[in-house]
Length: 136
Image (cartoon, rainbow, N blue to C red; front, top):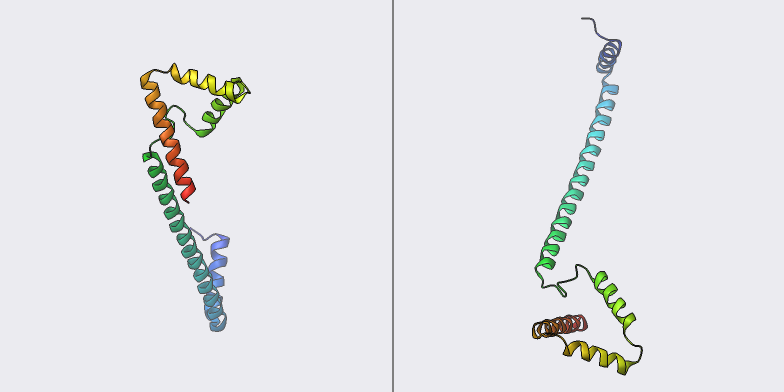
């Protein structure tokens, strides 16, 4: 089967290049430089990939540690929903501090013993997290 034009042209170019030793050395030098640059870029990319893997591994480790911590409030998935619920309740409370205290005391008195126990546990958790934040 006859060679295509591009293949024949490339073969002819290589033969002419080999016949001129200076030009051949120059092309070889350029080719080596190009390969060196490509290898350096690959090394840089590999280093970046290694750093990314390490960063992701650390992030997964931190996430696992955070999941193992006891939740501050188990009934709310995130702090935003807890804040929204708190705002809704505060809107309904009386503006007067004494009336507000009376309403909250009445709510506390009407709680079952089990709810009171959970309430105290929540207050202890909040106190612990505030103490940790102040020690930093």
